[in-house]
Amino acid sequence: MGRLALIAAWLMVVAGGASGCVAGRAVKGMPAPRTPAAAGAAVSQAAFLPLVSLPPYAMELAGDHRVRLRNPNAFPVFVAIRSGDKGKDVEVPADSVTGVDLPDGEYRVYLVFATSPNALFRGDHFTVEGRGLDVNLLHPPVE
Image (cartoon, rainbow, N blue to C red; front, top):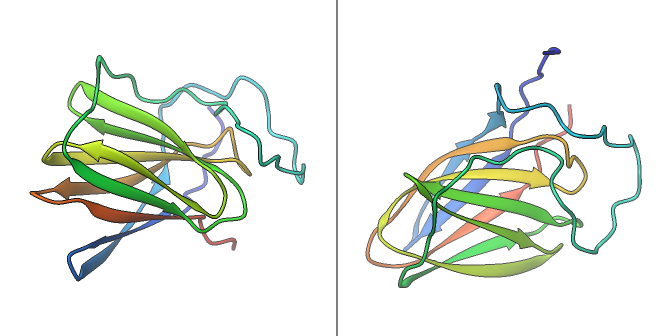
């Protein structure tokens, strides 16, 4: 496997007035991309498919608490939410909000940005307890 650069993906989690920021990094050990991304290629606003394998899950997540995934970027973000053997995959269009309903629990978030469809980013855990929350999907800073 080639050298993986650690790149920060930031999730801003805001719940009931409390906020925090969790750092992510490129996920090591995931299968290699199926095709390389074209450097500098224009990103379509249409649906895209990640070129990396997402963590598997056995059952679809469903619950009563609305989690709002906010994408302030000018390109779509594919989000994979996991908890134990359950999961949910959703694409959040550019500059928009998409809601998912989750039960109480602790969740891991994986991100694939349309500008880097062959890179999988992992955020730290977030917890849903009795009410929904907002998750801001921010592109990693360019160094």
